[in-house]
Length: 581
Image 1 (tube, rainbow, N blue to C red):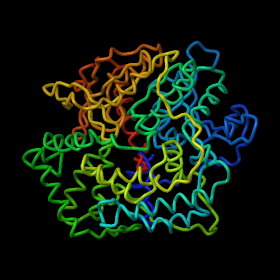
Image 2: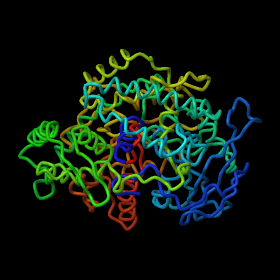
Image 3: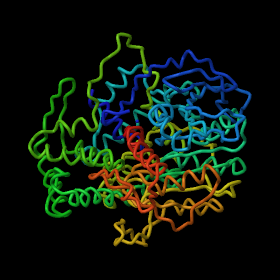
Image 4: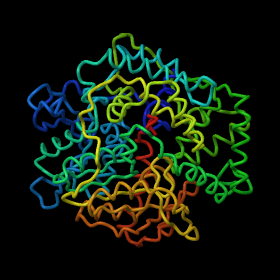
């Protein structure tokens, strides 16, 4: 049912293989329930060329000898034996969210991450506690009940006069359902415990120091780990850096500072590409922007019915806005498609745009009404972020005030405001977990990476516009550098591109610094700004587009790896709106 996906698009958090968007209840060909949880990493073959295990960890780390839960872990193993000098141990990955499935991330990206690192590392990820295959959280008895509740969705808070009050009321019911369905694990579904789970995983491999690459919300997880366990840091990259202080205050108030720059990149890129490569072309970037504004105005009063072979629905203003916003995360994946979809919509054809954020088939009830999809992750984003953060005022007035502040500050504020509001009805649970400060002298310095036009994790940088970069005012707050200040010796690497996280665009420069960091611990100079290859509309395949390129067989291989990473990562990500993108 289309409304359930809209609920996922809207209420949850930032948030994986591909028919533009991977469904949340992923068909999983591997039977995880047949894998017995163990205190050790007892691997079994799974999927194709992967290995899987379920590791026992304490439910409550304050009671380490008490009840346990099982964490689902997947690895794409190194080509080298563990006793080889070429084998460099495991790298753990987190795709973001909160609530993103690391198992699903690796199923899409594992082989190409391995190729990036010459197959010298085990490429490892896991479903965090509360997510999918790891003691998943559920607020409902069945998926059918969940789908029926989703009919009450509010698509965009500004889409209807009662949008804020409906979202506030829905949060109250969601919080009550969460409390009623709690089996005793809910209070222990938080980032603090997940960081401790990561240390357990690392130690189960036989290592004391973690090697980790986290994206978006995964940067909060990385920062928490580094703050709690500074002496257990081997290598940590946090990429698409979230302001952890803002996150733990449950504010979600500074994520959108560069979102308009990411949309401007669509206008500029479309104009530069010309009418042959951009169907939504007009005679200037401003004219393209005006063309979109006209489309907004028209669809507010003229929604478009869409009937596909196995799906149907109405393409209205909130859905159009959401689709454009989600496209900002992955320009290489979405901008060319978005341009065609917008041009089609002008002619009254909403099919392509509709499929960009909707499943190609409608929801079907199982014959067994008690059946739930083992891979479901739909309830976990709310559980993690509301457990992590400070309590949110419960009054409708506070919700309305937050909405008013967000919409006054940001064009996309009406979409983002619902994240904080969704925690306003959360049950009162103990908050004894780590919530900062994010300060540590780590055993090895962290590497932080940010893009110059990231729509949801802004990075202030000083880029010469004459070089084709996105000029960002020095009056803006530098989120990655704010986080970097707390970690002794850490360095921020800037990538000059739109999109969320560095893998949103291929860059041999960024790729080389990442390789150097994991292989030898080398950090880039703090003022480095890496260029990228091509742009979303031209999709250049020549090394001539990268100023760092070396024309060799190895460079051509690395170009292929960089482009495939961008493609596969764009098909395997999660947003705080909890959409897989």
